[in-house]
Amino acid sequence: MQFDMEIPATEFKENRIKILSSVALAVSVVDDQEQVKESFTTRPEETIYSITAQLAETDVVRVKLIPGSVVAFYPVVQAL
Image 1 (cartoon, one colour):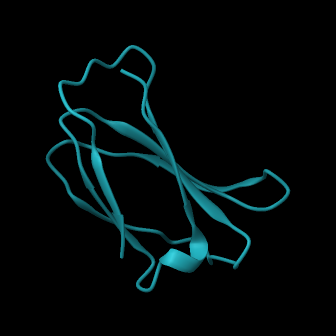
Image 2: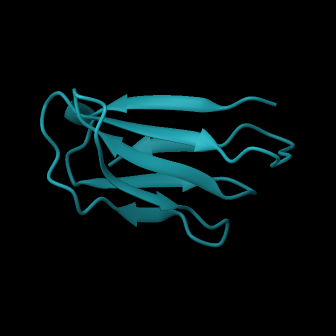
Image 3: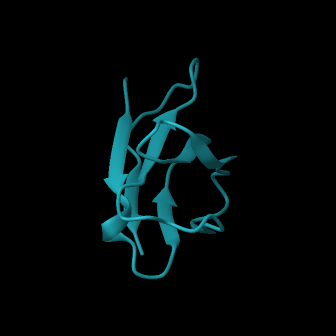
């Protein structure tokens, strides 16, 4: 199952992201020049993650399934 998601920085009010997933996901903050400002890997035991990078209006947060991971259901991702 393929899962890639992009959330515009303007959706974030608290610079946090909520992720419910049975597998680890790769999260990255990318600017309008495609430069990665921050990246981290989630853990199934955790649901709330802080984004430490300063988000500009043109940035996006990308959430991707790590290649080789098998999931039974799509992850739930929410900008906070």
